[in-house]
Image (cartoon, each protein chain N blue to C red):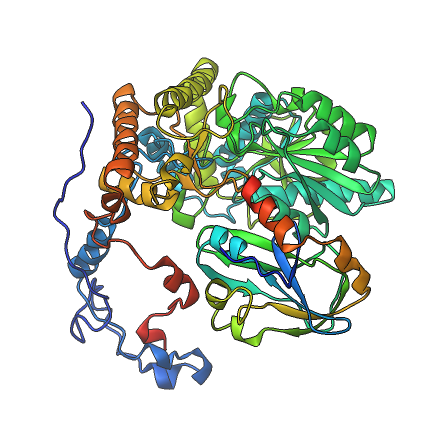
Length: 128
Length: 494
């Protein structure tokens, strides 16, 4: 199970990678994809949609269940991963890489400070 | 004695397309004496379906055998135990079928004049009254065709009532154990679905409810007993809190089987509920075909019921009343799935009040019997007595790499339909087992022994469980590939 140190994490099992300034990439964690099982469909938001922190921006559907995706921070969606429509399995195969879900322009990068570090997130996953 | 599955006669069966011979027919009516018509000259181009080129021409026995052979690959409640949690796959008594086939009902045209449809109208009126008596409510609509349809109808009525009060409000609260249809219905009615985390005992957490129930919350949708098979013992306090803040209480009646004849929604403070006739009242689930999810309401919501309403006039006649200015409108063509309503009416009459109460007793005893027998072999996330169903998980088997999905597949080899899996989502690796009242002790023992054997093999020979099923026509399917790249159209349809 991977917990890359350079990312920030939410309790809802999303990760955030800051791409310089106020641009952030968001996906779901290795732990989340493992819990969900084979992902068969990812519903993504529209480009330009404004999201509040904690707001649902899409859905990951696996053979077992359907799970909401929550935005860890507030901002505007500027890109969605175009590959996921045809290859949702990328989220399983490469959750922190090719399986990224959205890119957003953050409203307030300071919000990142309230998210979990890799260590905190790892601890959270080992509790339940 | 318990049944044991074995290989029977199963036929390899290919697609029906590409079979038969042009000109072969199922049924040929006697020659009418009229000349044959050329469809291309007789009909406008838009009415001709070119893509039907190559449609198979087969005799009646060929078609009958094709579908009967494929049905042999399938599982049915008429074959063996079908413990699909929350779905209440109880046996469907044949007397219901006999009643639904009585000519006066089955041949009635939906547009027949009311005076020629008195029997069917009386059944609709009677069944509505009986469901009100059983649930402690005041008025009913039998139009909704399924549970989710009932939820939608019920929430529309709540919305209409709140709108008349001046504010339809914005949110609907749902416990995190609720059926997935509940939030979907809320969203379809224009509400934001707000999830309420359950307390550690799997029940609605009163402190959480107190925190989020505000004057923008239209309703709480609660399932009682909930999907963990646990009775919401605080239900009266829950209803009072919601009412005090101007909201309505919607009860998802999917689990009514658990307290049929013992407790009533109306006495719990519920304002509106749906009842799944294809669950509690033994009508067929129909493989996605017609079901019925009647909605029962308290007096305050009665003016908003869908029209037409069947009224019993002073002169003894039954009439369809359309003049309902506050109604949310029709939610189904004609009067609902009347064939299903007839079956439920037959069930209620054949059981009688005492019989219905025995249903709840046996359903709860059967579930607790299974819980007691499996408790040493499987993890039970919410301990304590359950109602009509129980939730176990794969936690003990996961140590050996055996998951809920593997256990479900291994049950198929032992002749049982798997329970509901991976739901409710708040219990990781959940298996939701609902035996219903219609099973004998021998059947329950056979199921428990199969589950115990699987738990034992999971430890000693996990690979044998992971290879299951091996006795079926199709073995382990690639469910991920099937969902990622579905082929939903036959070759003929292009």
